[in-house]
Length: 391
Image (cartoon, rainbow, N blue to C red):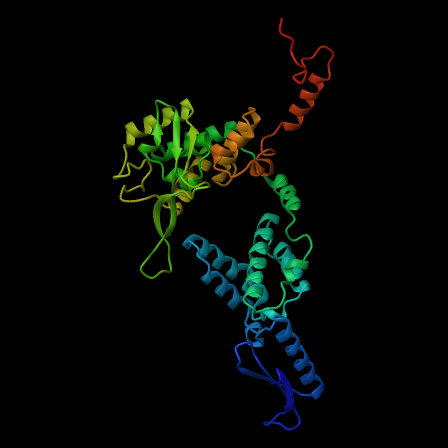
């Protein structure tokens, strides 16, 4: 039985129709204006069937946006990640590609999309690289599921340039000084001041600080256990909006749900004062519940009512709350704390993140480097590489 053949169209004798059987044995057809085009289709389908690369033309005609939604829905994602993917779709994919079919995309289209995100949307190199990575992942999924035959992102050069991202981030990084941090801490609302101390003095992320509880603090051992975070990622009745919840932090290694962080004496002092003045809340003995003490603290309350107040009253130029975590990491590195320890305390999987995002945040590294080399290249200077003779 022939895999594909050509015959005159029954609906219009002037046209020609290509017929073929797909891998499932179902007969498919497509009509063309000329016999030459119909025969080209026949040859193409025969080659696909012989090579095992058959594609259903109807699937490839789907809009890019529809395939993105399919890719998102078939993955096991948390609600917060689904919201992020939906935002990417609404802000950078649908506005550019509109109703374009996924099979029609060429390398040039992806390159134009990247340029559009940079020039029209003014997105940072890091954000563009992230979106490109997600988009390429979606295209890979489409190839595996036989929606398209190739991923045009594979031939796009420079889209995932990590070096360019790092250079751009270095030039725009917000470097908080100790004076600014102390001014913010002093200006923060008393009920939540200790939470900012945890972020600046223990390197906690915002969600981790909001989830802080009395049971995580060991004043005697001078350590803080970081194993919970507040996330707007709970299930709701409608499934549309995320509900807030306190949950375990994802473990980097099995059996290690969180991390242990040194508790500096000044942070411990602030925590003791907070507990004395404001107590704890609920069975989890939460340190920082919402202002009415009826539930968890929402980020939508934190930013305008806590963070912006601390910046305003402290007369500190705007920066994100994550800047306190950057301050923590950069100051530890500046003080000479080993990178492995800093990475562990901050919950990073490797020291690579520190090299890319923290080393350049603190100022004065160049001066310290010059001074160190100048000191070493001095007659009579101690050389740690030489073995010391023991009498």
